[in-house]
Image (cartoon, rainbow, N blue to C red):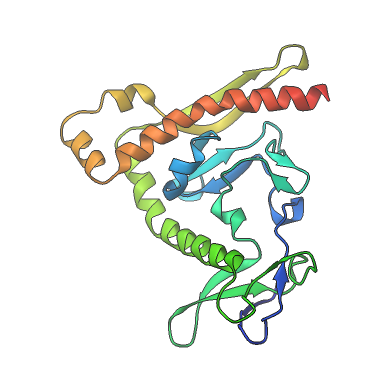
Length: 233
């Protein structure tokens, strides 16, 4: 990877393709998201959690039942309205310039960069083209999400709202799956919150985040439907 800062003069004609592929990280059955994305994600995808090294927590969207399986891809395009910011950013990253201001960098080695069928980054008469404006917003969302993620997930954990689960999925004659090492929102404990804990979580917006993550589990049925159709094909 070779990241360099975009320049609206030198890169005035640069185009970048918007497409998904295994080598871009899209072919995964779990992709990380930030709590700031829960509202959009929960409409279409199940939100689960995992503990990493040092018991650190991360939130993920569940996209498939087999490793490397994203049931929401059709060729090189996502079929969902929601795409996690970590994938939506494409071959771009946010860095600090010499003056301390945030600047957008692009990976010049990424095969999407310079593609003739790609989206322009700059308007003909100056300024960001719509695609680059979208990228900037996504990169800032990622930066904001990374800053707040640890504290939000630690608060949900401290409130006792996360429980370890094994998702058992029966596909009938096609067999079944057991997805382990996952955590989900404990809906019984969520419904039973009261007093100071309830007030605190409501005041800082975490109650809403927990409620959305809990509601998202209804989307597991859609995963099963897509997996059944895929196996039948």
